[in-house]
Amino acid sequence: MKSVHLRRVLPFLLLCGIICTTARAGGKIGIYGIRMIPYGLDAESYSRPSWGGGLHAVLPIEKLSNIVAATVGIEFVNLFSETITVQDQTTGSSAEQEGDPNFYRFYVGGQVGGHGNGFLRPHAGIDLSLAYYEFPEGVVIYSHQGNGYRSEVRLPGKLAFMYDLSLGLDLNFSNTVALDGGVKYLKGLGFSQPRGGGSVTIYPQYFQIFLGIGYSLDFLKEEGD
Image (cartoon, rainbow, N blue to C red; front, side, top):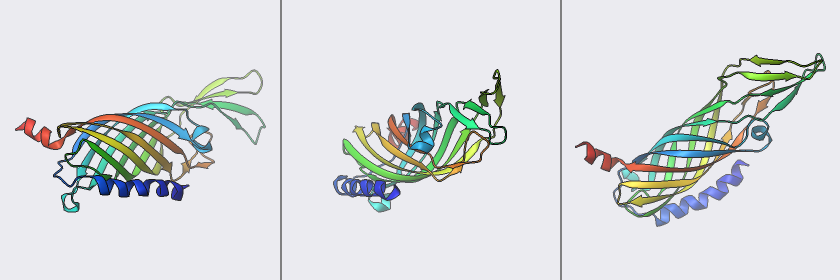
């Protein structure tokens, strides 16, 4: 799976490097909204398409002709939960579990593309990240044995290392404001099942569609002078 996505992204990386301008670039910071869609059985079994937001910075590297930039950001998504059925192998009873985990992610990486004065600035990138799944309201369990009952179980948060591949397009307005949108593919490198006793290791995958607005760091410096 990883090699397939890399083969799709690498040609775009080369295209970004070829067509982008090498004019001076000052970087940007921005906010964006996220539509996160679970992909594959491991993610689809525990979550539904959800909404969130993020904050990021793009910092072009002058020594690399401003074609390459460092990226850093944070994200938050409330993952709407799917209801899953868990079988107790000891008693033979079953129960349904549900909960709405919060998903936090901190990432750092690199981006190749247009970071100069052009209006159309395509970009592609790769990030490494640390994600945290929090269960603030606990997990609700509905038993299927007897008359049934409802209970709530508190679970500790779960950490997961991830990577993402991104493709996007930045619309640059007068080197001041930029509209930025695109898609990311996220892959978890494995962590214990978020519900059901932690007995299963899952490798969640997601697609993110993002749209945001950014401000030039040079513009912000001028405003502060």
